Amino acid sequence: MTHTVAILTGASRGLGAALAFGLAREGTHLITLARNLHPDLARHALSHGCTLDEHTVDLAHPASAQAAATRVFAGMPRNAQRYLLINNAGTLGPVGPVGLQQADAIAAALNLNVTAAMVFTGHFLHATRGLTANRRILHISSGAGRNPVSGWSVYCASKAALDMHARAVKAEQGQQGARIVSLAPGVVDTAMQEQIRATPAEDFPSLTRFQTLHAEGQLAAPADVASRILTYLERDDFGATDVDDIRHY
Ligand code: NDP
Image (cartoon, rainbow, N blue to C red; front, side):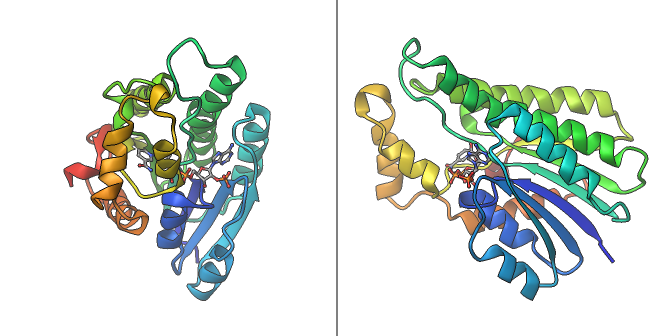
């Protein structure tokens, strides 16, 4: 019997991989999407009684994202008590002063960070409409969507878009519909942070802040953040604060 169906993007590494390992429990049907597979997730899921459906897809291509969403939701079990969608896949995108970014790079970042999350949210709502199950959507946002960072105009704008998307979906769903939150995860020790620390200083004035956070051991471990996010997803008041930050809990 499937208790929970969880759909998670960006499960191959970083925070998404930690969320996938945390979600892989008895009674859960876990559906993951990324360009790559995590090498150990299938074995872990099997040994924990979780059924796993892994999809490799480049979500920066809208047509591929749309096709993947259609496939995923058509094959999803429909008898669960709980449905979760976690839009976690994301990219920093082109970093540097405004005016030097290529249109293709801007579009790819927005397609992944925003369009794919919107497409999956739409398909999720459509596929679960009419079910009496508990339905929850989580966008993984960023503090950068709420406070501007020089050099990250594309990333900041993409995360601000996710925040507003969550607010608009909440307004549409009302009290009885699916619940949604756009959640900042804090500074997490992943490849994205490595990429941030490798940015040329001239493109990114805050470079030393992120280098110092790392040097002082202040990056959160992905498994710790994932565990706090999964606890947050269980809260009775999930959705009451539509734009939230896990560091408040
Ligand atoms: P990582 O770069 O470590 O992982 C990103 C994940 O997204 C990977 O699983 C990757 O899989 C997937 N992904 C990237 N590009 C694509 C693509 N084109 N198609 C499909 N999947 C893709 O990032 P984090 O784990 O650090 O970030 C996870 C989320 O948390 C992101 O939304 C990020 O913006 C957010 N965040 C992270 C912070 C941090 O400090 N790390 C701070 C604030 C927010 P693959 O490469 O296999 O496709």
